[in-house]
Length: 151
Image 1 (cartoon, rainbow, N blue to C red):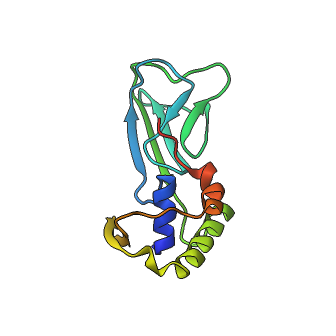
Image 2 (cartoon, one colour):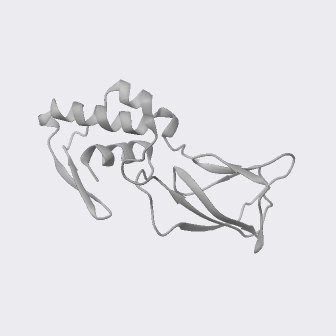
């Protein structure tokens, strides 16, 4: 994972590289809701959704959550289990993500002083300076639709 890819992942609070194996979450809502937020994003593939061990297909997904269709809701106080994947294979990112990575790589070439303290994400290590960094406004605008909401 390149430094620019790590920066994009950190900025959007999500996994841009495909995760394997898939995530499995079991969720119990306190009240019925049309929206079921999932812990990881961007959601790129839903493998299985069950409600009390019964396959459920009456939903659509966004990159952050599942929404029930029509007039139904996710039931309260019921086990809802979702198995899903996030991210993409390297090089198969959506156009906005590819463009942001390219812009960050160019930006980093002109900012050698972005200097570096260490951070590890999974098997990848990246660094940044103690004062942090602020991505260029054009990159933040490009990535805005991909930024995970804080539920």
